[in-house]
Amino acid sequence: MTDEPPALPPARIADLLAASVATVVAELVSLGDDGGWRPEPGEWSVNECVGHMIEAERRGFAGRIRRILAADRPDIPADLEDWDPPSVAEARRDHLRPAAELAAEFELLRADGLTLVRGLGPDDMGRVGMHPAVGPLRVDELLGEWVHHDRNHIRQMLGVTQARVWAQMGNARRFSLEDL
Picture 1: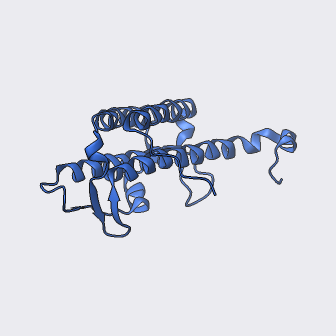
Picture 2: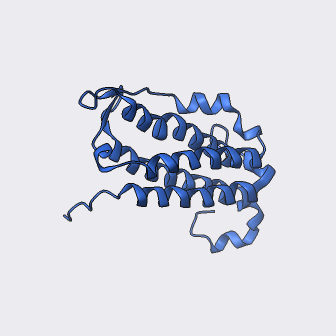
């Protein structure tokens, strides 16, 4: 068993979160009107993945960190809220929205989140909030999850794009390692 590496500092987290923007916006804008295509009923489109990332930024990551830092008493965990991502995604109806609009919303919100992360100091890392479902969450844990979450949904977005071109590949699908 190997030792766990040390937590990444806020500056490195900010760089990783900034890198996500380039990938997300490029994929979204490149798909254009096809960004709302769903591979199967009940599965998210690329647009919906981005909409979820927007809400997770607002409610889950930057929102929770701000709530923790705003607590009057750092020695008492701030109360954090839970939210229902599938219900929020359904209400947002991002599969019907223009890609450029979603890209602009994500870029603006992420720029604000990057400012927050770059402004965090060592004393902020151990500050805690209490989530109703998972229990205590430290700022440094939320930063790690933020990067992980981005990559998870980027992978999901890329998979949707792959599904979108699968039928178009015809006999070239034999080059893929996937089952036909």
